[in-house]
Length: 351
Length: 165
Image (cartoon, rainbow over the protein chains, first blue to last red):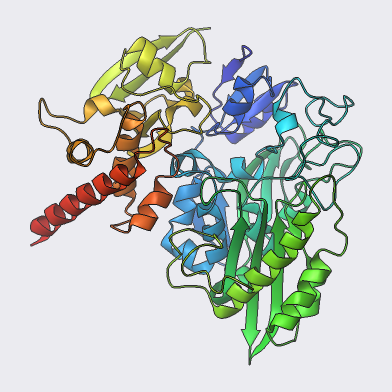
């Protein structure tokens, strides 16, 4: 690991100033950053430790009905907050389907959003990677790429964003609060992550020094609580990143879908909101045919980036199954295996 | 530049001067305090052998910078037994053969204690397996580990019932 300077700012303003310097990065729990630093994948000159800052670790219920999650709230504390899990069950299920209990206890909300891809070529410093070293090339493109992107990828980069948490968040119109050199601003989570284009080294809309201080879910996101699920296919039952995942949330009135929300994980460099699928579900009965149509719409633009054509059909089936589970209703208690298609309470095996 | 930090480790306050901020909590425990019960397996957060409790919560000490945990309360495997009296989870691991080579065992035990405090799994074997998935055992002693956790959980439930009765 490369030598670095350690800075512990006393305020958010000090943190922003310290992190705006070239070569500086924020340190929260470090569960992803330290792993990357140990592998020399990331070589920061300065770590700005924000874990001792006050006021960033609360879950607040605001007067307008929204909920504001501090950037330093741990993944576990958020998932196990009874009020939060009741209001946003798909978010809790996604959180609990990610990583291990130890990592969830440490990893933060802000860190989860900004975690890096798990593309093996990004991690292997002997490989060419445009994300790690701009302009060096992409060895994933002609390499082992069955897990890589099928939506939004470019010839420069076919990596996926690995977060589970972000998938239901983007479906529920989450907003990210950012403190930067120009003061406080906020953007939709959907605008936070960038598709690779010809600059995959630029992964987010954040500028130097920008600090995510909170994530907010609007009041309207609560209205899906009784029909919201997250479903995640992975190569082992637990403690694995998504091959493909989907968050599905329905607002059902008089037997019809008044509003649908759908997002996919593991398919692109960002959590993928499937608005065309949402549109086709509006006003129709929650039937298998409607869900099939939605699945086709969601993957219309998908194309393989390598040996991963199977992910497109897999994603369609995950969409149908997630919508089917959401329509059946949020279970009173999360299944023993959160988001798993093999969970005993996950519904029919064959969607 | 030197950095001074203090930790409470197994109930005792310890002060350190770090001449390098790169020291992980795991390396501090093993190299500076010679508490080698906490194991370095993968050193990348994948195996769980380095699991300790920090402020009552289980984490991977290999992915934690010591300097960032200034002021924290740390519990390691060495802090469990009272003299010759083993912690109930330690005793249950012996009773149920919850190990073979033993390398992952300190991490398994610390993780099990952390899990029982989290109170999410109860006595459901499927939930216990899921909640312990961050601890790998290459000998494959998982069946014994789950049995040990079930027994320890049962003992804890009984104790709690007696206390509340």
